[in-house]
Image (cartoon, rainbow, N blue to C red):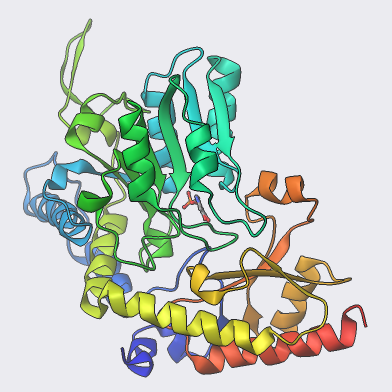
Length: 402
Ligand SMILES: Cc1ncc(COP(=O)(O)O)c(C=O)c1O
C-alpha cells in the first residue's frame, strides 16, 4: 500500500491539519466520499423510491447499488439484507427492541462492551424483565471463551458482543461465538463498528444473524450506519420506527408492512450519506482490506515500540501490539487522560481521545478513571506515530510521576 498516495486522497492530510489518531471515534474522509455527497446535493437531490422523476430515479438506483456494494464487500449475496441506519447504536437498538424479548429471556454480552451494546439491555431488563449476563474477560481484557460458554444457559435468546473492542482493541472469535450460540438455540448480534474498518469481514463465513457497522468509522459520512441481518432474522424483527416508506398499503384501520429492507427505513433517508457510504466502500475495496489490516498492524507495532520505555506508562488491554486492532489505550501515572490528550494537542497538534470511551462499566469495574486512546488507520504513516511517541515521552517526562 502506498501510504503517501493514500494521504494525498484526504483533504485534511493535504492541508496538514495535524496528526489524526482518533479514527476509532470517526475516520477522515477521502475526496471521493466528499465528492459523491456534494454531487448528490448539486446534481440529483431527489427522494428515493417515491417520485418518478429523473432525480428520484437516480438516487433510487444509487441506493440499490450501495446495498449491492455492501453485500459484496461483506461476502454475502442478498443486497436486501443491508438496512441503512444512523449508526451502530441505532442498529443495536433496532435489534434489541424489535427482537421480541420477553420476561426471563436472557441476553449475553461481555464485560467490555460500548454503552451502545450495554444500555439497551439494561433498559429492557427494567422494562420487560429480561436477564442480562456478561462474559468476564481476562486480566488484560481479552475475551475468554470458557467464561462465555458458562453464560450460555438454556434461557439465552440472544448473544450480543463486539467484534473488536474500542478500548483494548482485542478481537472476539465471533465465528466460534456464533456457533456456540446457535447450538444453544440463540441468535447472534455482532457490534462490528471497530472491526469492519480494519479487517476483511466475511459475514457469510461468520454466520451471525445481525452485524452492525458505523460508516463514519470506515471513511464514510457522519451519522451513517448499516445493519446487516440474514433474511430470516430480519423477517422476524419488528422495526424500531414506523411511518412513511415502511408500509405497502395503509387504510384507516390497517397497514401492511413493506418488505425488508424498506420496512426498517422510515421517513426520508440520508441520501447523501448513502452515496457517501458507497464511495467509502469502493475506496476501501480499492485498497484491499488485507492491506488496510497489514498497515494498521505495522503502525500499532511501531507506535507501541516507540512508547514502551516511558516510565509510568500503564497500558489498558494487552501489551502485545498484534492483539490490538487499531486502538492503543493507556494512562501515564499522575496524569489525567484529558490532560494527556490536551497536552499532545498543544505540543504537536496530535489528536487522540480521552475519557471512558463509552465503555463505563469496563473502567468503573477496574477502578480506572478512563484512559487516553490513540487509534491508527490506513492514512497514518510512520511520522505520525513517531511524533505521537516523541510528544508522549515529553509529556510523561515533564509532568508524569517521576
Ligand atoms: C465498540 C463500539 N460500539 C458502538 C459504538 C457506537 O457507535 P456509533 O456512535 O456510531 O453509534 C462505538 C463508537 O465508538 C464503538 O466503538
